[in-house]
Image 1 (tube, one colour):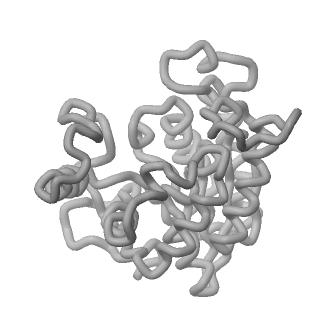
Image 2 (spheres, one colour):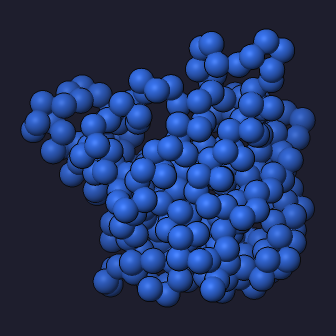
Length: 263
């Protein structure tokens, strides 16, 4: 059996980006290790969720552990950096902000875990963090360097299929759903990765119940009536039933891999 280390910027990123492959790997007997760079201290809080005197960072730590349990994670580690907030905010350069961290120093922290685990597979994000969030971009830089330092043989950039998003949005409009909602064409050009640049398409429809439950565990960020959780089952499957990756160092454009372990 192999070891998968999956690296994310904030609590809740893990289930949205890689929840399916994590649960799939765990069910197949692989060891799954979750590493989270920050505590997500600057996330927007769902009203009425926090207990009196409870900090968002404390709540999100607990939510991550519950999400990890649902997804079959064997070990969860936090690198201890501070959430940098959205692009262009003063928190981008605040004390301890991940986006402002020294890449070599942060990469060595992750590389130490990769070495300790003798990791076979590492997931990070694409070079623009999927949609440009400073911490997501930093996950790419730190993760890529850590993989090189540790000699991890398979490094995958988790992303979204930009062309598939266009197809799904067009289908939704044809069905009279979401008219006027969602990203416009300019925004789409800054999200995800073109299909022609992807290498790996993982069907995770068999694990959507776990993925959705892990999303529910992040109650401070994802309300029960939020867009994600309120989707009908068929729409949720269309939106989250495939997880896309680009394998570092491998040519794109050929037949898609169907998994992260050479399957």
